[in-house]
Image 1 (cartoon, helix red, strand yellow):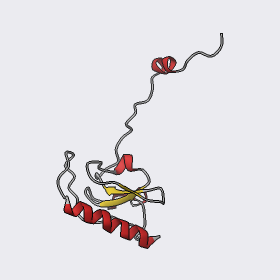
Image 2: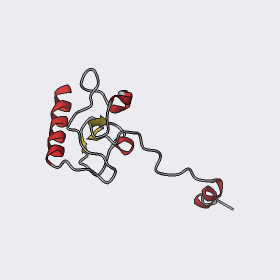
Image 3: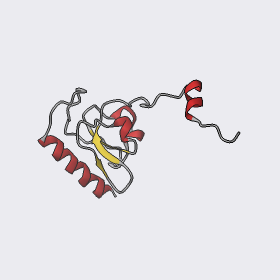
Length: 109
């Protein structure tokens, strides 16, 4: 497993090094892989160890990945991508009570 993750991180890093540019969000790939102690940890368990622009592995790419760069998915149900440097907030606002009434059709009469 560690070998597979290592090879995938190297491949993603090589692709990004070739096309290293600053995204509209200001994230520039560092060329570094941010890994845990066993070189196989996901960013969710590393905390503030990673820097913006590092290549990371995550099970939640919508929260941590810069989609202006390549995102690679693997068979372990996780993604490898460029870290934005922080966790994104929710993209779908919570439904208000008035709008939730409109969305739920009435059943029966």
